[in-house]
Image (cartoon, rainbow, N blue to C red; front, side, top):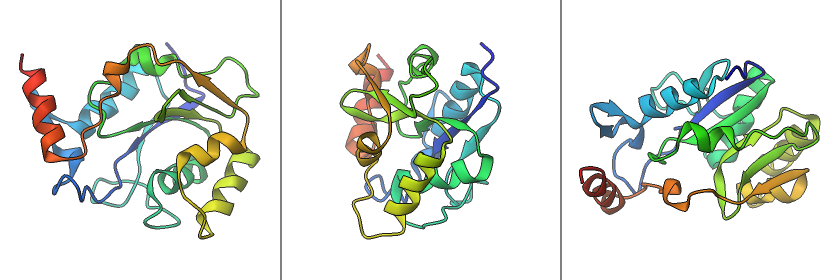
Length: 183
């Protein structure tokens, strides 16, 4: 599939404080979570894969440091001025098919996501999106992705497979994932 009109973004700029080590460097079958995320976005057919954060991974530094995923999304949108398909580095079960289903046909939809899951998401580069992000990130407001969903035209999709939405933030979650993956 040729989707050269948008870029991929791997959110990998966090501190991984709950994990105790950089989650992007955790290995599955000999490849890091970061490598896996980049390969997945490439399979979708993005124009280029970007990495958020300035954590030694050649990523795009946040304009507003320590602002979480919104800060990474904002910096990437400003950097490329194109639509983004955004994946967190710590969701190892995401699939190409799942991500493709996030890409909206309607150009008026500025953000699409799965119900009950703020990530992964598709986000359009649009003045309204950038203005909302600037407003939230430059203030003391709650910097949660869900606020964006209320601020711009959105498409909330049912998740086709909840089991693919597993997130690994802690050593125990990682251990659970690796024990399941080895079966």
